Length: 236
Image 1 (cartoon, helix red, strand yellow):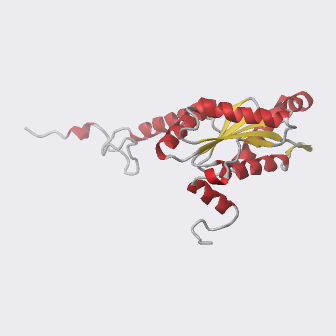
Image 2: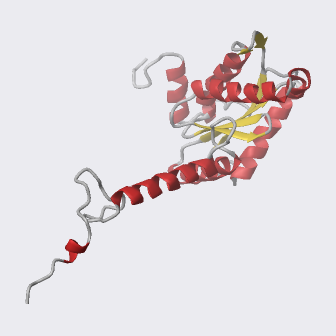
Image 3: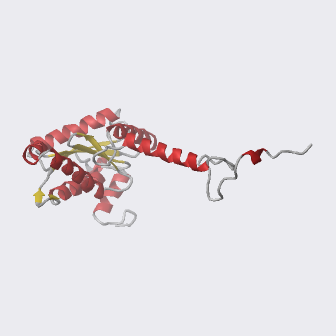
């Protein structure tokens, strides 16, 4: 009896095709690759705000909870920046909702350009955005927040001959192990300072009290020295 090669019933896949799940021999590599790409695209859609292209509220909550869990394990802080566009209702009322949408896209781009790759920019809802700053203490987060505020104020939306000036109010809070118990508390604290910034005249940053020198950790001291251009390892 002649032995039958079971693979003979199927055509040999192209040499350049690779199975996305790592099977050495696969009769449908191209179809599986297309399905995997479609699945990745759907997952990205679920986690991304359709208008601005940044992370959506669902992704924001998941990310913040993950970073707080990581902070609880490694002892490093996580900062949260809440950003609300000032007088956004007037933009819609005066210039129309399409211009309002373009303003949201513009703000998302400006914010994203001012942060690190590891920071997560999110659309919290409406005209409000959030930035999760992993492993970032208050001293390091304040310059980031101010840079975002100044960039927004100094970069008007240009659309069809319109130079639309936009400003934002910002609230900043920092999670350190044992200082807060949950992501919800950190959001509440950052929201509190955002409200304080809006009540104080808008286009400003409000945040938790800066720790006094005797309570600053070694990591915070290094961040502060780096901010002022000094080598944290250099001797006085």
